[in-house]
Length: 289
Length: 321
Ligand code: SF4
Image (tube, rainbow over all chains, first blue to last red; front, side, top):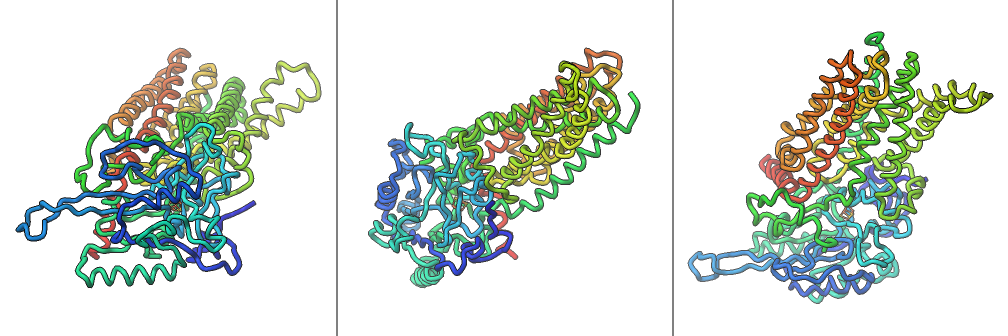
């Protein structure tokens, strides 16, 4: 019998909270979207390294984004947003274009809803503090999919014959590379270092420094996303520097790990269950027909 | 991309978000459940098993034999259907048993599996004891009524958990119309389970034995109606999901059927046909309630407004403080 204890202990170090003794430092990503050039090297490197099958080639009309969103066979996804802005020297006319690009990925949450609700123990907290699906345990119940507040994890449905069809799939933060001291494929391939890999403590410092520098340089829109350990998921393992509101990038502005409210839900269910018993008793004690 | 970009095609009746620039091409933020119709059916059959086990135990203890027999057999049928739906909906049905390697209170699906595993044998034994009459006389047939009673009472003890945990199963997701209904869904499902159990009683037992089923029908239908109306009107933005086209159609039908079923249960004291019609209406109403709730969740998952707006309001309110 395995139990996930991190939530019960309320530990900020998810690996220690899951029972690892003296785990190595927690690792994560810092994705600095201000220097993303939209080359999609991360998407390609991720597919290559992880052996992820093709999942449709179609033109969407969503700027340069044809992979649409994260899913079972897209573990890095580059978003492209075209915004009308005032062109320099155009007297305030919105004739300029601002092009936002951002490479999205699993947040490897401190309080991970997918892991909490998984009924088989397939979703696992690694000693590095990341969240990984064990393909040989997952039975494809699908519960993690609507549980994730970011819409990250999904069930692989194609191509026929792929060995992981039917299973929940998502970014592993390249567990097979990081365990051997290598950085994840996406970070390795990123030509501008928009994607950085490292210990989360170090990345948090780097992110704070970078947002400060950008603001000082006049980029007032720069803000961090996922860096606050007091947020609804206990802080993400994947930090982002964004240039607009999270929802513009398809990210939830204030995500909450759904199991935070679970004790209250169980209590309500207990009251409802007691009501069922009471109604039955009343139905029989009420009369003699 | 999300496989086959499925979620984009099931938007809320094509209504664009009010401020489309505040979403990513109107795409959903969260993933809708990939569950097929099996899960809606499971919600119903689980409730049906629970409601009929409760009625069966009461009938047994008060000597209403035909009511007991009908309800026990119905609960076994519903339990079997539940198990089939649960397993059939897995991406890898052959790995069903992997659920039995963990006991995880943070996972309502894990808890539900264990509730079903505990309830199932009890409901099965109780139903098996009903076939004594057709067995040749012997030790087994003499022991069975006692075993049946004990098992039936145990099943009834677990039944309220079986009838309400499915509400937690839905609410413990990021699907906004379900999560934000977490306080009310258990009562919707409890009422719906009682109403469907009462429906079985009204269909199965002669007029002289269905008094408790009538009262259960009225109380269950009333709870179902009241709690569902909270979903439709008192959840702010999320109520819009319950009032949108597809869910509203089911919930309207559910309301009519539950009300008709309760009225028929009360007025049908002298007519077995009317009682049975009432029972059938309650069963159909319970199915419609489950479909309506499920569809509302899908609507709220497909449209980013339901996810983003409440979070944005929360953030803005927090910053104002
Ligand atoms: S982002 Fe979603 S899939 Fe990734 S750890 Fe958090 S809940 Fe799980």
